[in-house]
Image (tube, rainbow, N blue to C red):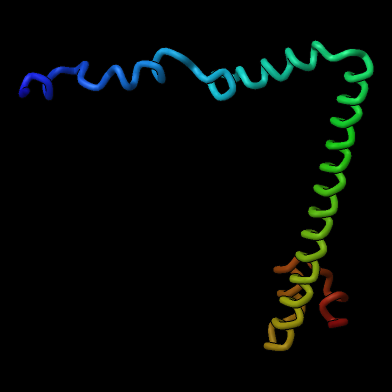
Length: 111
């Protein structure tokens, strides 16, 4: 029995299927290859539908990404104004606030 523990093949029969076969959907980019092969077999009508759905997806993605970026930019602008207002209330000179936050002195004075 002691020899079984030192034998490197002990329990290997349980691992062989995993080691011998690769999963074509997860290994070496085969998933993408199989998807492309499936698309290549589409009829012209199916191909148009597929391309339209891909276009719709990317249009939607682009719209959402733009809206998210616009929202973030507006949030940063609001944050700058809030920070400038707070600094002004605490007696920090207008010129320093404007230079530090990238605002004009007129914008800071209006707060």
